[in-house]
Amino acid sequence: MTKGIVNRDHNLRVFLIIGTAWMFDAMDVGLLSYIMPLVHKEWALTAAQTGMLSSVSTVGMILGAFILGHLADRMGRKKHY
Image 1: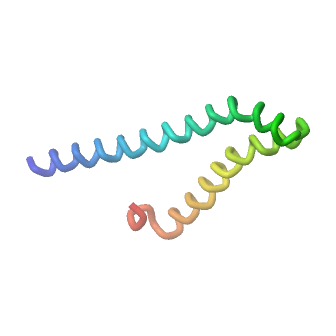
Image 2: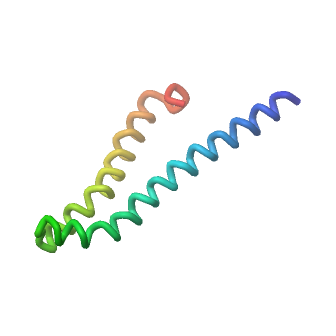
Image 3: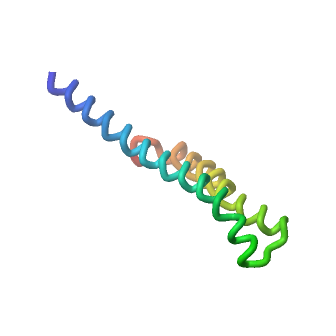
């Protein structure tokens, strides 16, 4: 019976951690849509430069997921948990 309570607490903790990470990820993407026009004007960027700057966040997430996912597959997900 104790094991069920531990699993429930563990699952809630994991859910809160993942929810917080998702919140910051969504906030990052949302803030970019408001900040980019200001950065474009302040730094006198071209449209291509502004596009490149705004896509860096997404490219970083893709590369990070690919590299760290591969690392977790090679070394084992339980070891990193």
